[in-house]
Amino acid sequence: MGEARDSATRIEALDVLRGIAILGIMLLNIWAMGSVPGIGSDPRISGWALSDRVVWWVQQLFVEGTMRGLLSLLFGAGFVILATRPTGARSALSIYYRRMAALIVFGLIHGYLLMWPGDILLIYGIAGLFLFPFRDLPARALIGLGFGGIAVLTAIGAAAVVEGMNTREHAEAAIAAGAGDEDERIVAWQDYLAAIQPDLEADAHSRAARQGSLADNIAYKATIASEWNSLAAISWWSLDAVAMMLVGAGLFKAGFLGGGLPRETYFKVALAGYAIGVPINFIEAEQAIAAGFMVPIPISEVTYQIGRLATTLGHTGLVLAALQTGGGRRVLGIFAAPGRMAFTTYIGETLIGQWLLFPGFALGLHGKVSIAQSWLIALGIAVVLTAFATWWLGRFRMGPLEWLWRWLTYGQRPAFIRT
Image 1: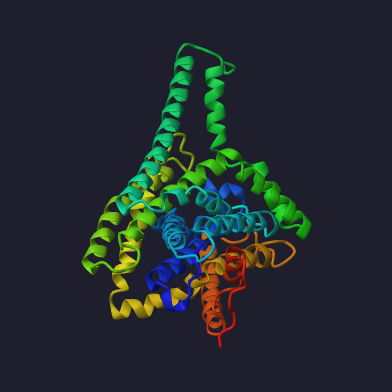
Image 2 (image 1 turned 45 degrees about the vertical axis):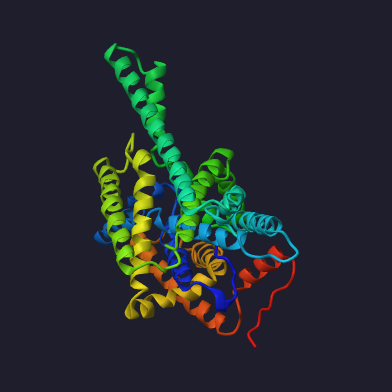
């Protein structure tokens, strides 16, 4: 999340970008908070009215993966700031790793006790452990390493596509040769297809648990968190995060993320990012629609990281260009407060969604809202948390969780109340 800096030395562009990302990520997280697991593979589960289809298309073209991508870029910028800051008697190494260790602990608490298995704090803490040795590299080297990580992820996806195609071809050959359904080649393809189908039993279990007691909810979410935090999943998501963080670190060192480059440069980046990313995202979405959301071999396995990075850079360029205009600063400036309190805002989203809106021991809305309605709820949450952050920072130097994280990082209690 965001690096806690004194108000006088903060970089407004980073705060605004971080605020947009931390509020925008709720547009994605609220689906998993408010519906069954199957909605990830088939959004029609919760309704498919025109408004739902519009929301789905907007998400696929502009939101999917980009808010997380933007947060990762900004984490990379924060890494550069922290790792290169004068630290007095303490080593930068000690301070940095204390900060990452605290983030890992926060992530475990968030995922297992606060009931959000989709937590990114744990992943960012683990990914951050690998960044420190690269702190002195120049911007181009950092960006190059980040692109290299994205290339590795793309290659892994391509290998998965090849494996899927081979499995299908072997099954087709077996069928053509007259083999029965028990043939291992046919069974392998049937198992492959079954894996992409919504798990109706898991969906029913989700509904029952989420409509249950506090104990039922915690036990269910802890089980999901353990599944999502498998070694394979942690490894994948950590590489995903490290790659984007390195790109972000390089872009910050190059002066891009700080907002100090000419506006024309940011417009060019925005146009290039959207010109590459949006068509890729459209092709991925169109394939899903055409296949009734049951795509056996999705092209996104190969193209997702490229489209996500390009669209994320498009958003970044557009925001940074707008911040160089008076109107843009006035409009986008509202995101600075939640950006300065990104950690607190992120946990606030979880508390509202997982503890107030959706569980059976509270309002019990789980499984009862469409994806369009969930976006309206997410926007309402954004308004509430932005107002809270603005009010809070008028009275305190930093958010409560930012204050705690800073205390754990430096080992001394920071000033909290404004005087």
